[in-house]
Image 1 (cartoon, rainbow, N blue to C red):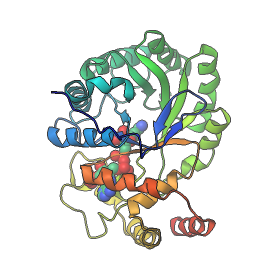
Image 2: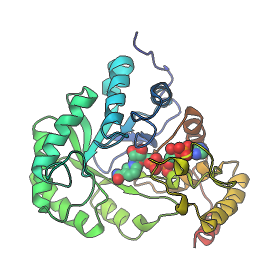
Image 3: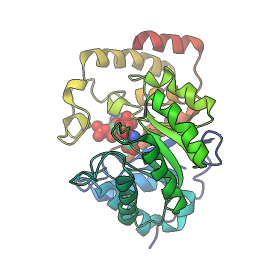
Image 4: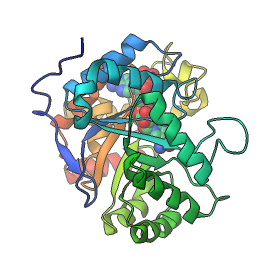
Length: 329
Ligand SMILES: NC(=O)c1ccc[n+]([C@@H]2O[C@H](COP(=O)([O-])OP(=O)(O)OC[C@H]3O[C@@H](n4cnc5c(N)ncnc54)[C@H](OP(=O)(O)O)[C@@H]3O)[C@@H](O)[C@H]2O)c1
């Protein structure tokens, strides 16, 4: 029997418009990069997706290569969606991407028309979907002409396989080049996906401003710097944490004394605001009104629950922001 979702799921979530498009995202979205693959526990993945949807998280972010093994996060998500949430498909925004190595040989990587179009076909098949809501080019490809990549994105919309288009990890210069090309094509390009957290603030240099000027939206990933912006690493590297896993993308050497000292200082501010460190880190991002959504990852339901708590306190005083800047300098 299909899942029956919580009837009050929209009561406590705020939805932000993506740029000047007609599409809205929840302030917190769930990403399936880690913990939803073939190596992970299916029942845990299912619990996290159902819990999220019950809390008003309508947006789920995937990519062709999420797993491991690559493709397995899409397979698991498709299974959960089709078994449990099929009747809610139109209440969900599902995204996927292509841009990293997915299959052997010269056609399973980067940004050619050949790769992008066939990869999206494979993603749709794995997820058992007719279309995704947003299809992203996952990373810049300096070997392929930008026009070829962008025309391929335009084609998938025309083919009805994606409703909107996004780009991810593009630099400022290429983003500025891409916008007029996509506008001229009439492609519904609405969003850029970029890394942003207290530990990685490059978005503030110029990109956020470019997106604002062109009325494009932004969704940010790794808001907790993959778990560093929590209490978890203050007393060593716990078993089962991302930094301890051989397939985790957070490496042990990234857990530095300097970062942990900063986390300890941030904890004092979080305490004063009645927040955990993760809640402080997420609400600090949401102070930017042009960031449509914060894309979190999680390894269990409790983490999602805790991170959703950040929505209860999103205001910062000038003093608090100054203090945070000083810690992060
Ligand atoms: N476009 C791109 O190139 C790109 C790149 C990276 C990510 N993304 C997207 O962004 C999503 C989020 O990225 P991310 O997973 O790096 O985000 P993140 O929120 O910075 O890190 C998530 C990890 O932090 C730990 N965590 C989360 N909440 C916690 C809490 N309350 N207490 C303690 N630990 C907590 C968990 O790791 P443990 O396993 O240690 O518990 C969790 O898996 C991805 O799933 C993906 O959809 C996109």
